[in-house]
Length: 126
Image (cartoon, rainbow, N blue to C red; front, side):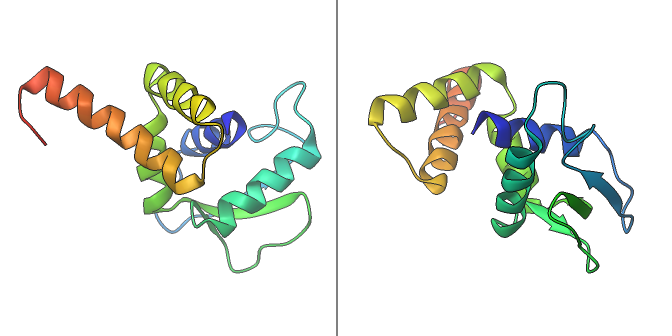
């Protein structure tokens, strides 16, 4: 899940204009950084697209080549839930202690931690 978070951050950093597309390769930046395994990057990019977090272009091609439009609403939503390193660390600790998790539970836990932070800082019960 660390790689999933990192890929979402890398894609978001591209700041794609509405309606534009970009060709990304699992073998180099911005997807792959030094030490990253391109096969693992490609696999996780496929997961991000199948989960509806990354918007693939119509002419998507190649096992390690990705033509995308950027993050979807769901992708931005998840990233906003796990962006903060402290929230991400707490989320990972929670799922580790639970001994297993699903993607939906990970999102729910991260959002619950953020909700707690908002309540703490604003005094407003959500």
